[in-house]
Amino acid sequence: MRSTEKEYWYLVWDKFKNGDSEAFKTIYNEFTDALFAYGSKITSNRDLLKDSIQDLFIDVYTYGSKLRQPELLEFYLFKTLKRIIIKKLKEDQRFSAMNEDFERFDLKFTIEDEVFGKDSEKKLKLLQKEISQLAPASRELLFLKFNSGLSYEAIAKIVGIKPDSAKKQIYRIVQRLRKDMDSKNLELFMMCFTA
Image (cartoon, rainbow, N blue to C red; front, side, top):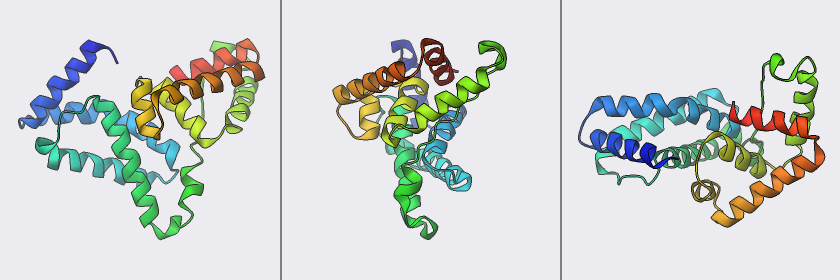
């Protein structure tokens, strides 16, 4: 996250803490889609996910004036959402095998045919196959690295590892994919994550 962007969110958060409802709306509108995208990789239960995002923002709104200024607002929201989802999954009797749902961390991609020509669907299936063979934790690391704009330090905190480990693991994952896929398919991979 660029310094000016970080400063912007400091100002928005400060306004929110001082009772500015427009600042809260700004936070909500900016991060809801990203939170939904991240949460949908953790659970396929859309109702549970929507409830979790709603609970997150209710907590932020209710306790925001008492909360410290987060170092990175996006990191704080991702980390909190993950905690809320896991708690709800554990509490929900239908998910007694919580780890089965949580550890899937699906990464699905869509891309326009004109970007890679007529065989992009075939390439996309190959990419999906390669990604599905990765461990759930590896898929989560890739999603956070290429979709969130978070630093390695923030990613590491979300997944519960050290920043150096996050950086090394992401590097190794990309190297493995580079080895297993030709350069055009790896380019497709990079475009899917950044689209």
